[in-house]
Length: 192
Image (spheres, rainbow, N blue to C red):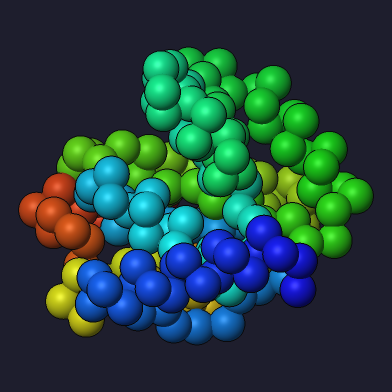
């Protein structure tokens, strides 16, 4: 194992132990990581600890506004990718090029798109998975059990309602840091 990964893993395990959180599940080799429920900025910290505990690098999409000021270098150092939510096409195109050649491509998205409660999830994860053929991994955090982990990995079928039923079933018992802000997994495409 490379030294930076060993240092990160050691740090992650110490911080998880101190905070009373634990990791669970099997890290995928490649995947579009759907992170939910997303209700707090602490979700990013826990996601980084999950990745570091498993010695993997996640390209985690983070809105560009967070890269301004002193937080920017920290985000870049952890593998975060700046995305302009008003015009994500350039960033997504670059990531899709990386996905074609990277054997260990892990792209993380907060499907809710915000820490606030909304009516729908963003469908970017679904479109990226369909376009690349890379399976979806349901990553999660659960405050009551103090667990952050990797859930199931599966290929999407193209039947949006059936795929989302599977996703809803998985997240049904997961609770975020601020549960009142959780958005039920539902895509706008399901209502068309």
